Image (tube, rainbow, N blue to C red; front, side):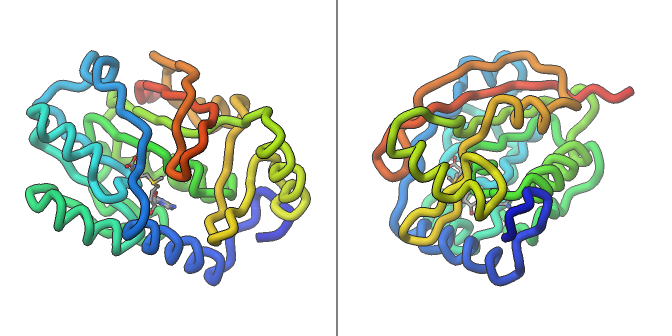
Length: 226
Ligand SMILES: C[S@@+](CC[C@H](N)C(=O)[O-])C[C@H]1O[C@@H](n2cnc3c(N)ncnc32)[C@H](O)[C@@H]1O
């Protein structure tokens, strides 16, 4: 990717990132919790819930355990889908291609997007994923997002500074093992979600998949159509 936040990652960069997530399916356990107390205020057990970037299906498995029955997950990493099918054979987990969610317009009552924006460095690609989410969500449907915010500790400040010019965005950084990750300004998150009516926004401290802590948030919004 060049130093322009609107430029697409090259096909090679995209393939490198998917390869990273395929590898992560064998070595990582994800840690951020769904705030079920808040989610269940807005989403009933009869609702159709789509988990975008579902990984190995751990959140859908939790919802299933709680009695939610109409669940589908999408992830672009084949090894995540494979692990999910082995660990939770009753779940409907599907491979996604690019940002395409192979579902009809306005079919979902609720969509989860947990720890996925952090995998997408480019504004353009994030915007495209949000467009697709908007397309499949019913009017009045719920979007639940949780993700990482910018931090102020030295380790993070150094890596934000190191990669700022290369990627054109403060908060993007590469891990030694190859993952390109992003921590977000609150302004970016507001901008990305501005078509939804915000119901909840809470700052949190997350434990990361690499054993650190990070600023984060969870958000619940409703799709409003003019
Ligand atoms: C940190 S994991 C979180 C997985 C899951 N949401 C959870 O909380 O357990 C991020 C997931 O996003 C997926 N991902 C990466 N790029 C994506 C994209 N452009 N669209 C959707 N998912 C993506 C990865 O394959 C990975 O499974």
